[in-house]
Image 1: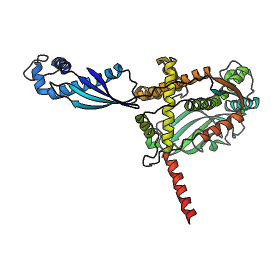
Image 2: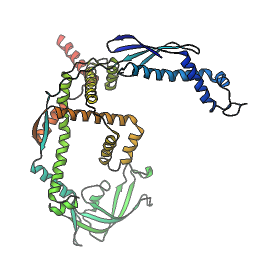
Image 3: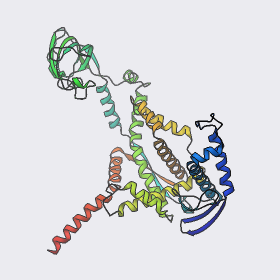
Image 4: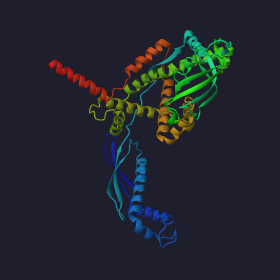
Length: 452
């Protein structure tokens, strides 16, 4: 195979490639021998069909298959030989080909730009931390105490009221007939929460222990059995017990009920949880500070094909011709992606399989009951796994940058953090081409009015 640089202009390079006819002939013969063991033709034993017979019957298809494979292999080999970093898919232009001829084709490539990394040590960014005030932790503890309340038996004569817990059995019917799931034993509901069926528990207000109460309710619209959805149902309830809420004492015993060592441990876990919620959002602000400096301090020529593809992926209104905002955003994303990738390569930053598995496991833990769905999603969508890998890679590069630059520590109260996050989200809303179109329409209308 002979490879020559045919032309080079900016980030576009065209290679001229010639594959010798002898090499093609050899690969064609090898393929015919492979097929000899696979093809079953009438009049011949399997594996004994002569290659010339196979060629006579399937020659064109086999030649096309071999040429296609040679094109792929020689393209990869040419790029490797010339040590080129390619952006996107190469374009192949066949010049001459055919049995008994050399394969001559050109390869048009969009190349990644050469990136000269600037010193990042002079960059500055803010490292935010959250001060979780005692009153916020106390409020959270109070909510937990209400949520995980305990109950004591009421005296037999007492009637049920909102906030009480009722334990009951029920027998339900629709149009006088029983159905699958029409019986319930030792069902416990807290009156006022309306968690069983809509308007069910309010009909149990004012009942006594060891009595029966008939309740009418509608089964949910999303009932697993469609024939039962939204059906009017009669429940005959046997009230077995009524309990009144007992105010939880917020102490070590309460903390242990929630799976922590003691109240101090529970308090610390609440503090960490609240802090982590805000820190994740504040990290986005720190990241933007770093990315803005990276972008401003580097000048890079963007490959045209990458820019076009990124604009397409951003466009929410393909019919709009005004792609100014999308173009700028696409250019910024590609530029930063190239810089971060170069930083990662230069500093040997990688994401291994275990790190990807750990991240998927985190997502699984955050979605109880949907573990199988999460695993299946990544198994069936290789692009999702690739996106996850890219996200982790970017995060590792950003964390590496943080170790090299000057980070100014800044403590924030919850109120200050909320305001900062809100302002950040508002100022970083992405303007799509459809937003600009609306703005242009308003502008043109105002011009018409002013002319009048």
